[in-house]
Image (cartoon, rainbow, N blue to C red; front, side, top):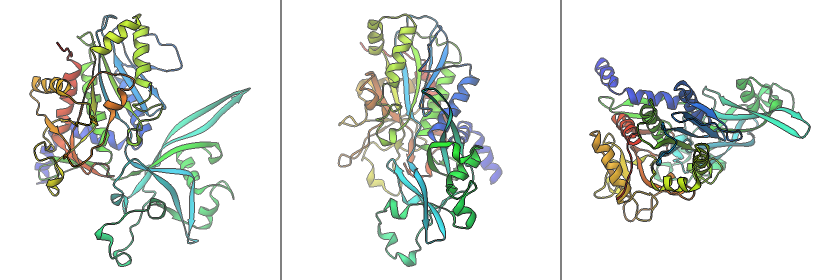
Length: 457
């Protein structure tokens, strides 16, 4: 039976690559670093916002902001481009962010960490799981006159470091009858026992045992760390499940599945110089789970600034930029809710996406999603052109839905946009489920999208 399952999994090469990417990406900063590495291997050139850009027709480039958002683009052979073909997804997932001065002594025997919620999460699945810590630390690199230089460094502890133990059923007989969690009291992870070494730390009486652990993994002294952005993450690796491995489970499927599949489609489409006169642009923004209102979020000027600089560096006028925007198209890629076999009444009576049913086009009358008849029709045509299945999602009419990247980014860059995603279960859980075949479907759809042109009569 296991040999048969292994044979089936060979058909899911794209899904296996996705799970590998997610395993290497425990924080938004690691997501962007891993995409940078892939881009450099594909001969893209790194740009910096604070330096001059020199762009060449046919060139491929990328630029980052805050090390947690990235925009990659490939230029056509002519500087007289027609428009931009864009996709947008997000690098962050709901988690717990570790607060400053995190160590809290408890019962005179333990140290637990002070954390707060990041994003709208399912809290219950975080209990009784092996957890670790990833993110970045910031150290002071030097000071020269009035100039202070900082250095950031990625950190991934990469071992079972923490756990949030559940309260036994004997002490909470109503545990299975619904419970509202208090994050400050009930969801603080236990870090260590309060022995003499843990109390003092390795750097002396005043040191912080948790920061000492982080410093040790980073190869620096605790005294060198000025600040940090650190998050908890679930240590369980992604896996195939189901009779024939037709399902996948993993942390951060929302939205790293869309990040990876749109990225792979983008790389395939621009492997050679794009044949169209469009500029192909791949965007990954941070902080979508908390509203995108940051300098690296979809509501920031990051995309607008980048597209403007491209237009300027190619010697085009302001008028040309606005004409190009009018002919541009964006795919806002953020996963969708699959109809759940155990909660059938939670889905719309008619528009009920299923895992492994192909990309999902998302609609909402209140414009929580940007899809309309025009943008949806264009994406449907893209899917049909390469023989891919697609589906439709709408919320029940008595149930509110969430918003995503397309309508947020439109405040600064207003283009025709369709909201899509792949169907999944357990969205915003630390371990989510989706379809093995959908990964390849989405990659093929994105590749064809970047090779297409949008025009409305």
